[in-house]
Image 1 (cartoon, rainbow, N blue to C red):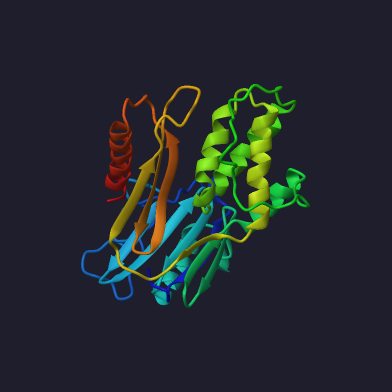
Image 2 (tube, one colour):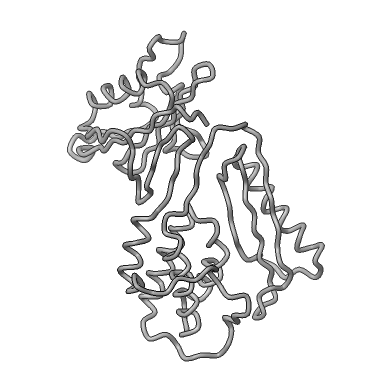
Length: 287
């Protein structure tokens, strides 16, 4: 990742009024200087993610990510990004928000050392909503001795439980450290008990003590490196195992998951192979 890259935000406010849509055919911009027979964004959106557009000229890469009416553009070519914004403004009613600070609840900070992303504001709002702003923080998101299958009274507000867990799932976008814990409490959405809600509060207490943790993307190589692991029959209810993996592009984490396996494994070797297979699928998708 180029640490000299600029990160800009835009908002499209009239796609409904004009009937225009931003897609691979409408983003057709001249390059300064124009490469021979080359589409402006070097082309169409990526097939794996039709909302992501990439322009590649030499070693220079410019990325445009579209989500409904929010746009984020990142790249080292300041002149091209300026031309890009002006060209989009001819087709759509664009609000130029300048350097990106927030995008879909993610706080973005650019510096010489790289780009930092966290969800501190989203987390603070979540703590306020859940009444946990003054709760005592803890150093881990889940107790190792907690048995979530212990018989306990049902929680009296299941909808609150589901809202909080759904918000925690969104926080895993920049917090891989809570992925396993959130996966565990997500398995009881249908009928949560007071023990399950206590586990959710434990995660919130951990987050309260670490509100600004996130991910920092630094300049580095484009080599992929993945680490995976799993337990064996860790779920005392159905004896299924949980697989975890994290993938790095150079020094930067770009993909991670913690998920219960779909079948029961009869040996620790089998469960490790299942985890490796899941990780390989993700790697192929990335490549």
